Length: 138
Image (cartoon, helix red, strand yellow):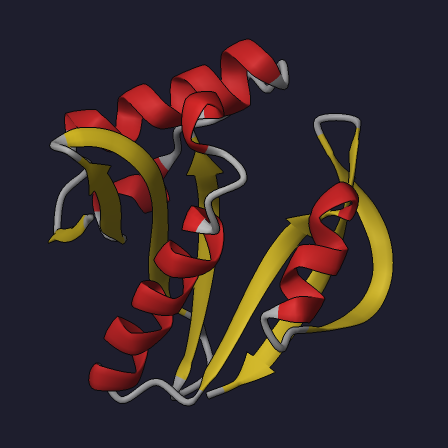
């Protein structure tokens, strides 16, 4: 297993996000201007792209946002989501970050709670999919 950090949107991250969010889950607005400035991580298993996420600074000093966490179907159940999330948190910590926020799909809330995140605010919808804001102090 290897995790690579990219400062541009890498084609392997695009591939994973298209397959997971657009083809599997039916999202349309997957790519945005944040992709141009975010840091992107891609986790590889035997040189195959298996998982990805991105992070970027928030509007408050020391706060970062993590998003677009996706694991390819064939690699699920191997704790790769928690591995890439942990790698992103380490990168954020190394960049001076102290707090992480994310906009989680409601179906993934328990996953994030197991990683130490707490929900806050009211649930909302992103492309008709229920989401909740969550945060964690690093």
